[in-house]
Amino acid sequence: MPWKLWLDDQWDEPEMPFRHPTEDFTPARSSAEAIQLVEEKGIPTFISFDHDLGGEDKAIAFINWLTEMHYDEVVPDYQIHSANPPGRDNIRAKMESWKKSQLL
Image (cartoon, rainbow, N blue to C red):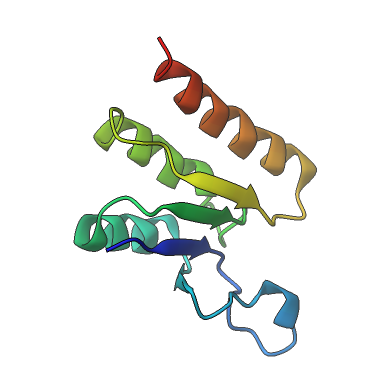
């Protein structure tokens, strides 16, 4: 069953409605929650990324796990809703590198 992942530690905070996912997304607050969802549901067809997930947790930890455990699977489409410019660049670079590796 296709599904979409919203990775953001503040996805349901009332004072931040712009970070709330639409109903067609399954939210995760941390890289660990995102990993658990992928283990249960398989690779999502689409991921919306925040970079900073609270404390030391970053979306890159989840992406690193994805590329290790699901390297040969279809790379999901994605968007980045993080306000952290270097974090956005890091996410984009890692996801695009994964896509390019499948073209070889």
